[in-house]
Image (cartoon, rainbow, N blue to C red; front, top):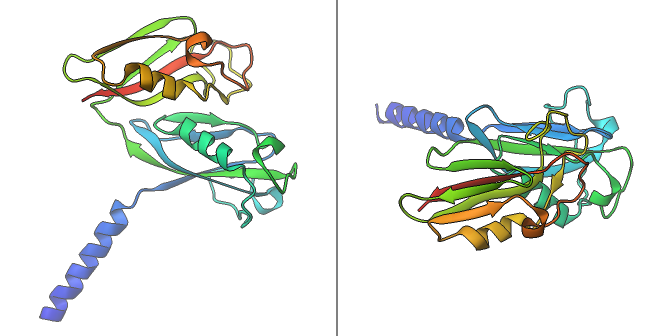
Length: 219
């Protein structure tokens, strides 16, 4: 009887741990193709791992299936951090096409990038604001003070603030997040204007308008 009970508890525990593990999503970005990370509605991108390999080891027509990746560590560390942080807390995020500037070794034109990521349920206590380039937006807390969770100035999708789909979709100001955190955290109100003079000049962009996206809570 005791053995049966222990076996049942062990099975229940195993089932709980299995169900509580976050589902992993994959996106394989083959040469000439932008990365495209997307979570189900009501969720945002959480942890992002970036690997690479040669396209002969991937099925470029099944980009949501994991490929055989290289054991070498040739992606520029700073680029790994930037790419992962750009997508964090977004529902949908377009990444750059594989290119030699992302690597410090093994700079083959046949390299693909593989993004492995998890999705987390949206926080109902978070406020999400967007405004187009040149416009202003007010962050405000009726109770508590502003705490920035995510700030992005640039463009990482095709159609926000534009009726024309973008071509260069990994377009960001690397300094915008820290500027906005320094300017707004701890305040009850914070006015922001979506301009390069204040938020830094986004790089790798086309002529389409940029936009400002901010996620924050009142704490």
